[in-house]
Image (cartoon, rainbow, N blue to C red; front, side, top):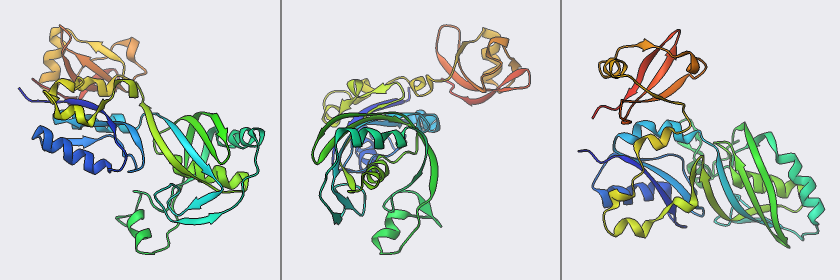
Length: 289
């Protein structure tokens, strides 16, 4: 029987997302491991890794909303927008709680955000951070992101603590930098902890050390945990037989508005993701035993 599923790991500080993938490959002796969204070396918290056939579902995890607890140091800017970068400017901080609350209103909802120069976004096939390290000036892209929720938890000059939920693709480093610009004193991230990715929470995450003890495979979540945001459908035996051989079957009216549906065999075993087309469902990704 193949080993497959999703690992919700509490990523430690100081390692890259790729480092974490390499460690899981070494621990599991499984080559087929992929992450569902990166975290900077400075950042900690929820990091989702898909193992085995679960890697086919990475795309459905990457696009989910993410939640963070962030600490911002006002009065300083760095070239990476976080504490790992070189100090660029330094100034005094004379802002109040009211100033901060008013500034935060500009960052709630749908906003235009420029990515940091030191980011994994690619330009002509090269990540921007590699170009930046070579001293090549780049103009990072501006894109629309959504800040679903943004709250000030604590302000003790020069540090403020934020709690936020945002869409995939949001750079919290850019948010900290831009907030500092609005406040007129600059700012950068000194600590960042991802507390959730969709329904995967930090309270459920396992420490990296736990994977070295006992049977790591016992920590795997079911493969269909990656697509819990898709509506479910239990198939009849005849419908399941259609899926196994790649055939279409009639769509249920109750799911007419669902472009993708996760389907289960009689008895509850996850079988596939199906795509809605016209008045029927067609197999999209099938997971045979």
